[in-house]
Amino acid sequence: MNRPKPDDFFKDWKEREALAEAMIPVIGKLNRERNVGIYMYGRTLVNRSVIDLMKAHRRVRQIEANELSEFETYPILEELSGLNLGPAHIDIGKMAVKFMKEGNGSELSSFVAAEVAGAIGSTSKPLPQSQDVVLYGFGRIGRLVARLLVEKAGSGDVLRLKAIVVRKGSAEDDLVKRASLLRRDSVHGSFKGTIRVDEENSTLVLNGNEVKVIYANSPAEIDYTDYGINNAIIVDNTGVWRDEDGLGQHLACNGASKVILTAPGKGDIKNIVYGINNGEITPDDTILSAASCTTNAITPVLKAMMDKYGVNHGHVETVHAYTNDQNLIDNYHKGERRGRSAPLNMVITETGAAKAVAKALPELKGKLTGNAIRVPTPNVSMAILNLQLGQETTAEELNDYMRETALYSPLQQQIDFTNSPEVVSSDFVGSRHACVFDSRATIVEGNSAVLYCWYDNEFGYSCQVVRCLEDMCGVHYDIYPKV
Image 1 (tube, one colour):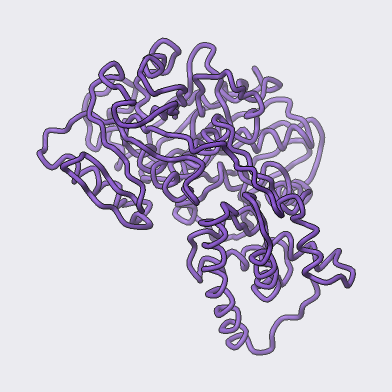
Image 2 (image 1 turned 45 degrees about the horizontal axis):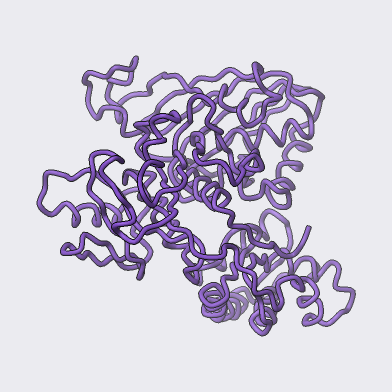
């Protein structure tokens, strides 16, 4: 892209700011009325602020070393708004760059129409009818999945959060307290929207979505059809049951049809890392696991390394934020070392992520070892991959390959890329990727490579869970521009 840098940066900013402001209602209308998601190099622009839109453009300029701006993307958005589009995901950033490189003097209107031809006039929906979803458990992951489901409700004909199942707390204002935990989060900030508490009907209204709060001590107590819920997918966030017998309790409930576990599954349960082995999901699967946050973080990078270089063997060291399982102060804990105060100590503990990778990438079975260190931060973790590759390379070549992988490959939702020398863990709170590859930390010597991967072990993982959930119920969008 050859557009020169502006002579007057302030004037340029104000002009681009005005364009970003004009983009917001167009993006919202496309999503709300036509179920069209607008993206910027894989990052959603739906429900984003003016500054968010401008920063999304800036990220592309930094990583792609071009001058992509709202001057190029807004006209494309205008063209899209005038087309009779069906449900689709459209990346206006990639489309703008493609037009600059391949337009060859053609009219923008004809170029855009040709690029999204498959979506014009389409009446097919991602699902024949909306899919009911129930969250069983409402802790850290449950609340973040709830935020994502409400955010992605769109026109209301895809995934619909219909109920939350919890045990009754001792407080009389239990529902109010649970709503407050959803509304305010010390790590992830405030809920993006409004929450109405209807105590009389035990209901939370989240941006217009009526969500029933069901109090129960076990799945056996629940008949979902009593609440108008049918054929629901149950998202088990409790981690209490991790095998088929335990999770099968959900399937015995009237109105429930499938279960997805937000923890590693045991036995023959498929452990799915979205982007890697979600192709194994079949319509007949009734119980699936979304694996763990660490498994989701390291598997995509290991897959990329295997595809390009091969992996002979390696070690994974996880520097992990403390979790609710640990103690605030020294106290009894059945696990080794985990009884010591989480905010005051680094705690060596075990991780099953290295072995769990083999469930998604069988080629790595027996090739990885792993360990973990819990550290005094509330969120965002890091995986350090010490790998012996199948061939020699350089840090520059490997980083360039990972940049291309993050921007253009099928793993773009799983792997993000940073080339900043100043980023630290808090900069990745809210990342929607399974991991963020830190290129400035890469070390390569011959076929030995040490790779550093950040990941929001709460929100990034929750995004992967929702992707698995969409796949499990058959939600698929056409993506434009086509690769």
